[in-house]
Image (tube, rainbow, N blue to C red; front, side, top):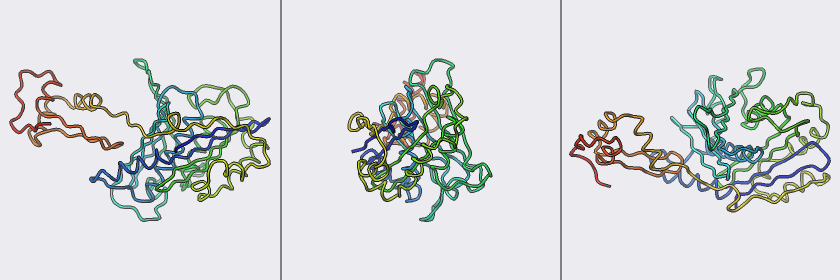
Length: 327
């Protein structure tokens, strides 16, 4: 069962979150494998997308925000785009676009940052966005301060956290075909709340200098990939922090925890077709007999025949093409 565990270090300005995605993650992979057109993800891309999924759930669980968190990476490699979206109720979905093939040991830069132009974007989209209101978005490159290519996705996000929240952050991420997991350790703000959404106060005064955070981050960094993927949460926390005084909160799991959820719908696809315009939609009908749109996230297929399109555009004066398919 997928789960989120939050904890604090008593008396210290440090917090932590540990996420394990099991059924939520395998559901994403199963749906992708069932889509025969693109097929299953190759192992390097599967693991990268799993790390992104764990990281996105970690980030959503760490902020008080009534809206979706969207984590994306894009660049000039064979992986053109990888996207994870997490809703406020921890419904999660993910997809990636691959052009060509990948070696079994492909690195992050080989997948998405060949020419060092890759980017990572974190978007916060309010659930009840008002007219004219824009989502908050932060974008960082896939390279470090010396323009060196970053080969660990956790390093990319740590760089983002330092720039955005001005808080020391350590991330340990891992994924395979069964589990996507992540551990976040973060120094708490000296004043107020973190400013991931563009609010809050500067915390630059203690960056890299808080000895309590440094000690705990050093312990967390010793966590190995195999341990994160195979050990239960109690065992991980006990092995890492057995000398620390932890205050643990009720885990979020089951209906309250991470789960696969897709927000696609017939209505949303209809709006997309409306944006194409009637003539473009009609030309597709003439060529194919129907319009078929598949959701990249869940694999759901939506089909529209000539009657559907005429009704959608309120074109009662138009006769659907003779080759229209029937639902």
